[in-house]
Length: 375
Ligand code: IKT
Figure 1 (cartoon, rainbow, N blue to C red):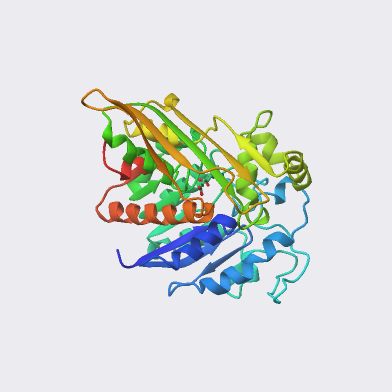
Figure 2: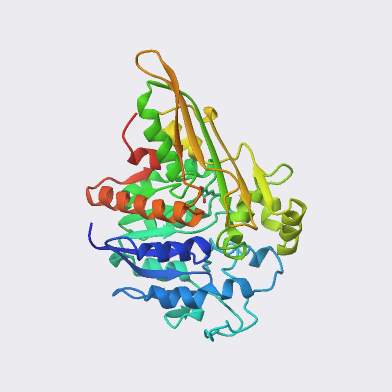
């Protein structure tokens, strides 16, 4: 476990923070990263500091001009499966960053790094090098439900053997991955799905909290996020959250312009509250035999303008013990821990668990609860 060479697809907020956090974890070497316009590859290890510095400023510098430039996290490949609406990473830069980071033409993103090369086929470029990559982290908002499953399929078709891990949110995507499980197994892929905070960290916490019980009646996940790193760095995730508000869905959220999103945020004074979100914690807990999906509820509060959490993040699991007692086990995150810490730390932790399983020959689709004590 001391030499895991990993790639990150997407260098929006999540991708960049994953790279940053990985520097504080043992045994992880980032060897590839890509966004829609470029790829950085170095089998001896990327210079993560340079990459972060080069990509940090330019995400915010794009014009706010429409859905095809709006989400912030998805690489884009040409080819038959390419979706012309896939969002760019960072859009089009209009200016050099304050510290003089180079810009290639009008495109920002990874090509602003001295390690970045422009490409029309970033994902294929990484697939071409995947023999030397142990794990691929998909830092993509998945505004197309089947986007991540299709990316997994492409790696499997290229006979990639290793770990793939995503931080997807939507329940319905898990089935799409399960549908591809035979293909993933045949290739030798251990796919860890829903491995961010929720689903992810908090699903794992629910699986642990459930251990006191023989029957679980309800799982309540209530999260609070203050966007410490600011809205600009989290455009993809905010847009995904908006799709959960009453009157919105994935398509309407995807088509909103940046100006419309800003207006919506203004209307709510920067604080958005969500209930009954379609988050895959439900199917992932059901899949692990812990409870019925319908007994899992996910909601939370997002404060786009403050770095304070507007509410404390908790996971409450209510159940009955073997000796007939009913109780609620509650897992609570400290308000001082940021979303960035609570998404990217666990994602990399699950990545390591995935590599352990992959090296033991365990292939297929795994959720966070499958990597915890069994129920
Ligand atoms: C996610 O990225 O997993 C989902 C986001 C919520 C993160 C919760 C973090 C909790 C905390 O830091 O206390 C959101 C739904 N986009």
